[in-house]
Length: 219
Image 1 (spheres, rainbow, N blue to C red):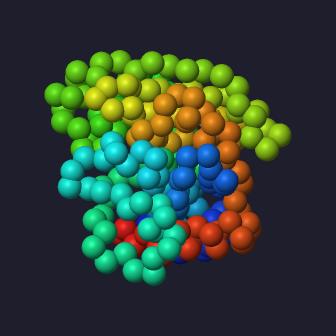
Image 2 (spheres, rainbow, N blue to C red):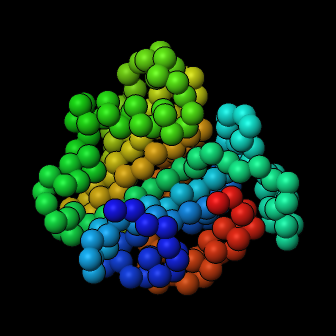
């Protein structure tokens, strides 16, 4: 079951590494935190981010405030809510999962699973079923990325029309990172993934996230 709760409480209570964007090259700003838990056990943490760099792709009537307005204003009166994140990342520890099949969609990017996730991805960002069909099959990029001295086998699925949509998976031993993006090109997404860092107990980073969330007032 999913919960929205206190960012610091969730991240610092995780027994596995939670990855978040730090010092982003594309103005990503923290917006939300969700987790999946069972009684007394946190299974996964998802962090969402917005970016004015990609706000031109948001579908009306959703609008993204200018970055300088966010950082200089103490009030977000008159700012429209944005429908969805431009980047979200889910961290989970495979060893924590209660059932080997319970998180099969997190653990495998087989074609059948990817088709189901693609339909959900397009729907979340406001695209019609017809546009999903017109988008066709995604391109696949596979490589090894190095994050904080760990090597992750990485897969990125990307659709270029009607907008740039992506889903990704990074895996290293018992660590699994997955997520999605709306707007970034393949190279921009790879650069963003390379900027992911473990944020457990990183109080300054979490404090900055809380500042960004408070100023945006999106949800």
